[in-house]
Amino acid sequence: MDANTPLPHLGGLTATEFLRDYWQKKPLLVRNAFPELAYRLNDEDLKELAQEESVEARIVLEQGKTPWELRRGPFAPKDFKALPKTHWTLLVQAVDHYLPALSDYLDHFAFLPNWRIDDIMISYAVEGGSVGPHYDQYDVFLIQGFGNRRWQLGQHCDEQSPRVAGTPLRILQQIDAHFDEIVNPGDLLYVPPGMAHCGVAQNECTTYSVGFRAPALTHLLERIVDAALEAAGSSRLFADPAREPVAHPAALSEADLESLRAQVLTLLDDRATLRHAIAPFLSEPKYDDYEPQGEELSLEEIREALAAGATLRRDPASRCLYSLQDDQPAELFINGQKEWFPPTLAAFVKLLADRRRLTADELAPWLSDQDALHWLADQMASGFWFLEADEEDA
Ligand code: SIN
Ligand code: CO
Image (cartoon, rainbow, N blue to C red):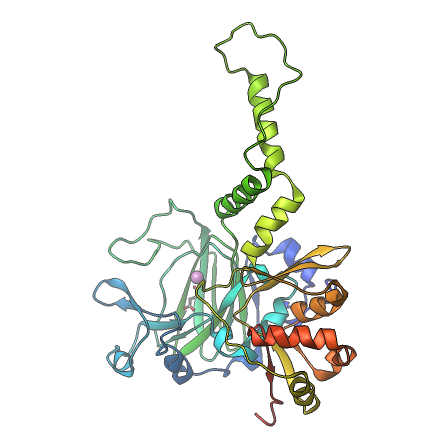
């Protein structure tokens, strides 16, 4: 993706301009950004997904057993029948994991690294449905499906912002709206982290949330400390060959404190250790018990399927990331584990990992390379990539 090409789904901003002026800073409303998403899924599709054991689904009822009652899935058909006519929302997480074609929409945000992307959540609300005024810690692109929603955006919030008592949800007591708009099918609203927001369904509607994630720095620190301890062993001791005489032997001097700090930080401040700790961590999947289902295929079967019009898709629920050396992948991590590849396949790994979906034509230069196909077949057996039949045949 060219960082300086105007992007229609960002209202004509380039990726560079959007990141500079809006990302993590201020909201952006783009009318009619994704018109084709409007009727992509209906309430029945979402209710079906919400009945599956492995799917994370919630219902929020404004006036339930408590104010802003939260019900967790999986749900049974009778649970939906028992709901009131208005003022509730069904939210289904990670729909892109279950409908791989939906994950293609994430390509519109490919100017951000995969490790920052969380999932596509879809909500279905009846008239008056809302999850209440709240703030999220993460950035979100809210894309309106069918129907209309009134969005109010307000103040910047934090842990201290007053919240409504008696509900398991983190509902804000008030929203000081500086933005108040009704969105229509296909409209996109970007909301930066920490900004109060509240979206109320004006009629039956769906909303697609392209959500982001950011690692907690304390979690990163834990991993880095573990890796640094492993790399250093226990033999490195504090050293002071340049010591000056002290006047107060009981004092911990500023100079010693500084020297201790500097020596400890050298353990942490090592590129190789940092990469070793951070890359697998950032490649961890959204659901930590996730295990992709692979398929064992022969090289011939892979070639034949591609020749028949199949495309190769990266598993949308797996997260993959590579570290770089001289602009080529040096190490590949998928779902928290290092995946070996022959160094001669670095360019192939780059192509596979960067793209969600590849056609036979795009793969053509590699199809006669036995090493490349063998490696791919192994990866497919692990479930990280799979073949998808030509849509017309599907
Ligand atoms: C919704 O889809 O109803 C809520 C999304 C959000 O506020 O983050
Ligand atoms: Co929100």
